[in-house]
Every structure is written in structure tokens, then in C-alpha cells.
Length: 203
Image (cartoon, rainbow, N blue to C red; front, side, top):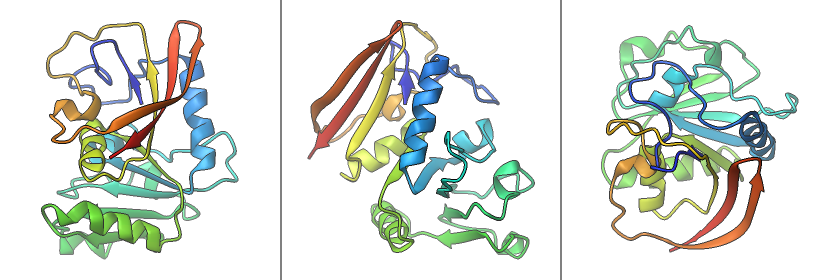
């Protein structure tokens, strides 16, 4: 995740991907994608970037996992067009009228509501053979995985800018963590004017 000094992930109400980090930050993200065999993100991230989350090596194909409560998604988007990229959509209440329109490489999975949802998703992803899951956002999903004590590491790019918008998306969704984890700094690098932090979480 790249964040501004005031803990924001990007401008408010953006309807497309607006990077706040440098080109090096994006290259770093693409390297991390190559190391993951699963990538998870939410509906807001999908709407901002409705494409495949490729790494630098396109022969490394990660299973894409999308969390969407309403299934209000553009199923003509690039993400769903390549049959070589498996996509699983987790939804609390999928629309039975649309599931028959999905291609064979796209699966819709109904999840339980409440506190059992993340445990269900975690177990399902593990059952797909995924051993390294990269969570690409947004902040609300990061918050949920931290609250459920499932987030193990965080790669955080701190950019020297201030968004200054109250409603801009925030790290951890701008929500309170009931039991904040302890954090160990595994690495801290300064590249240009950005700080790259590799953090390990302990619960």
C-alpha cells in the first residue's frame, strides 16, 4: 500500500486509479505480485482498476479474488476476459440471475455474514492451493484482515505528500482497530523521496 503523510490512499471520489506513489513504487508492487499465487481486492479497487493485476513476469498467473457485497460489477471488464486468469468473487448475497452469465474461469462464492466471513474466505482461498496471498486493497479490507488477525506482513510506501481530504480512502479504512497488532520493522529503505517499509504483524 502507498499512503500519504496523512494516511490517505488516494483522492476522494476518484472513479479511476490515481497513483500517489512514484514509478518505482509501482515497480515494487509488480515484483510483489510475482511472489504471490493469489491476489485479493475489493469492489472499490476493482472499479478503479478493472483489469488483471499483472506482475512484471506475465508467466506468473495469480488467482484473483474479489470481495463484493452487491455484485454490482462490470462483467465486461478486462479482469474477466482472459480465461487463463482464474477469478473468484466472494459475495454475501450473489444475484442468482447473473451467475449463469459467468465464464468457466469465474466463480461466485456465497459467504456467511458477520464475523465468520473472513475465516470462511481464508479457508476457501487456502483450499484453492494459495500459499501466498497479496491483499491490494482497499483500506476497509485491510482493516478486516487485521481485525481477524490474518494479516501477517505489510509493505507500506510512505509518500511525501498530503491529500488533505476528509473523505479520501484511508489506510485501514480510517476505522479503529479494536486490538492493534504489535509491529516489527523488517526493512526500511529510502528510495528517492519515498520510504519503503516492510512490516511484520504480531497479534
